[in-house]
Image 1 (cartoon, rainbow, N blue to C red):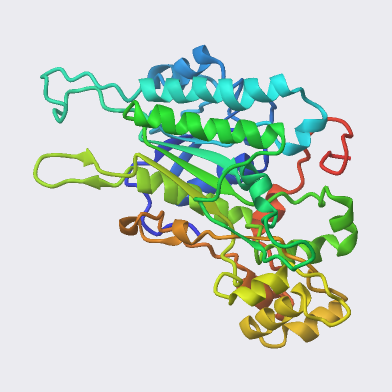
Image 2 (cartoon, one colour; image 1 turned 180 degrees about the vertical axis):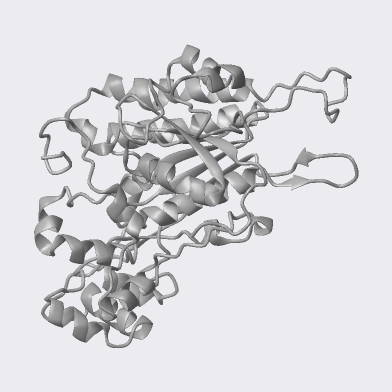
Length: 409
């Protein structure tokens, strides 16, 4: 839901990957939060303002020039009569896991690492101020352009850490893994490796410049079918996505609100006296996933979550049923009527509580709305349990021709 206190003057946000799922969601939603989005993508779409690569240094230099930006035919003065220079960057563009089948490792390295470095360095260069009076607080100085940089990463960077730990006794049930920001990143494919490396670049550039950077490690939000055949055949698509919302999925509308929270955490200001200095976050990393009802369970239930035991009913299905009924009485009967089931095994649980902490406690103050509990309540009432934005963005695919379940067919 949009904030009731948007910026007094609509600031401009550059959204990379504006033709993709999250980019499109941001382009559609940011105006309701009081921002003016400008989209950049190599693929044309109704939500992309400029066609080009975020790794094109010359293009970036132009985009960060207010006079060049306002002079472009893509920017209509009738739609943006008071267009401000780009103040914020939300970097969504990337090669995703589905591209592993269609792109080389070198292409992943170029796009996800090298081009991201180009964008980071271009953004960091704009934070150099030139004061005409020698006083950086003087109103005649050239103000910082980029006030925030939000990098959209993924929980896939955790890789092998997402599987239950290997040092348990063979044959003895292992608990589901509790994943936090402190969990080691052990990538198991080129996608996870390059995203993890880009996170390190974000830290490097942020720590060596005035550029504030926040990394949002998002869990699943794609609308396409599950790529793993076993999981895809386990439950119906909508049924599976509902279950995932309890431990490894997030609604795209809540990712948008996390991006806005990231912008505001980075640009918090103090106006004491005549000064106006940013005291916001210079670097941060947060898991963005729907809050899990499993986090407060005792250890024995974490073992039950990762136990597939249909014979005695002691596994994840029973934990799911117990938790869901407590959150939303009557959901069990509705699930049965729909022919839906609870998932039989949960191997990891994402913990997004740090992002939901207030900014003064080191968090983002993120307030997700499309939670597992809300989904259950809406299902009982016969309502659509996902956000309207999910349907508005739709299934976009990742390729122009068929490359498996993630393509537009």
